[in-house]
Image 1 (cartoon, rainbow, N blue to C red):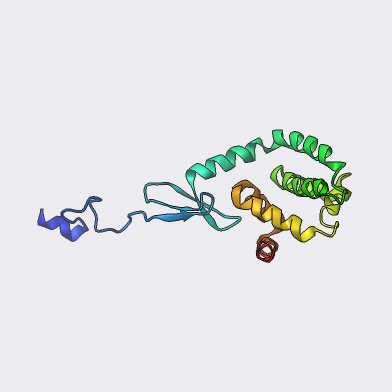
Image 2: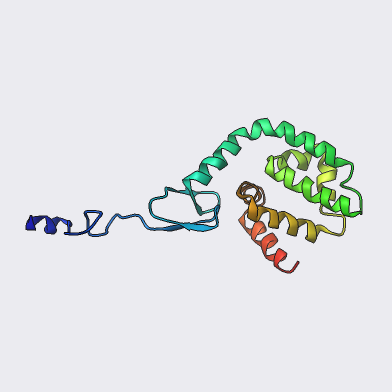
Length: 169
C-alpha cells in the first residue's frame, strides 16, 4: 500500500488524490453568487464570463425560443410605438420598455434598418437618453439574458461605458 503514495494517492484524502485535478468553487455572474465545486460551470466565449450549468441551460432555452418570441416581441413593440415619442412619465416608461424589448427579443438589427427604426432611435433622442440607458442597465442586472443580449449587440466596450454611466445616475 505504501507504493501508492508514489503515484499521488494519499491516505485519508476523500478525493483519493493529492488535490490535483479537484474542481474549485467559482463565482457565477448569472446567479451573482459563488458556487461550490460540485456545480458544473460553463464558460461563455462572447462575454468571457463563467456561469453555472443551470443558468446556461435556461439561457439556451430562451435562445432557441427566441424565434417564436420574435413575433411576440414585434407585437409588444407595436403596442409601445405610440407612446415612445411622448414627453410624459408614461413615455419614459415606454421608451425603457421599447429598448428592453428590442434587446430581449433580439430585434435590434431589424429595428436599426426597418420601419420601426425611427421609434428605436427616438428612445435615445428625447432628452432622457442617459436615464433610459441607466434603467436598461439596471434591468440587465436582474436578467442575464438581457445582459447577454446587450453585450452581444453593443460590444463589450460600449456596454461597459453604459454600465459606468449608470453609476452617476
